[in-house]
Image 1 (cartoon, rainbow, N blue to C red):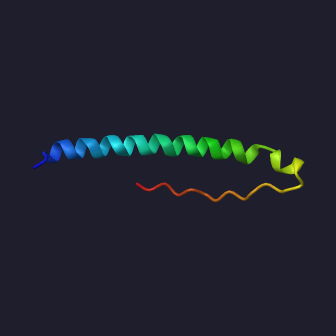
Image 2: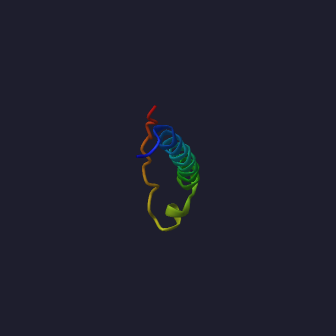
Length: 55
């Protein structure tokens, strides 16, 4: 049987990793949203949806 404190520590570490990944994706989305590559092809920019952060 696993120690509950060890499981909790692992889950907290996973949560921190996922939060860092989400921050990186938000930065990438902002950078891609300001890029004007679609205008060169005659396409408009895609609409970005707002991300709701969970507690």
